[in-house]
Image (cartoon, rainbow, N blue to C red):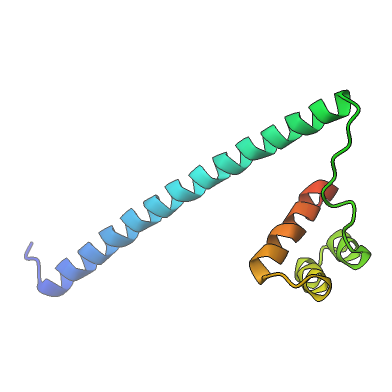
Length: 107
């Protein structure tokens, strides 16, 4: 079989896509493991706080419009509502809303 330059380019491209796909999959799995670890740590911390009779809820003063939007599954609306009340960046608002989602068990 004779490898033409076009066939060689196609083979190299396919191999590159395969390698990049594997690297992306590995990175996603690493992130998923880290999220799972942090979630377990948060659950243990919540249990320790409850056993000690302490309450810690950084989202207890969350605007009701944000909480209502999160409960309805409207994440983008919740982010908008939070930014209307607080002058924060989009990234900070997103992180805040995701924290509210975790606390409410919506995620």
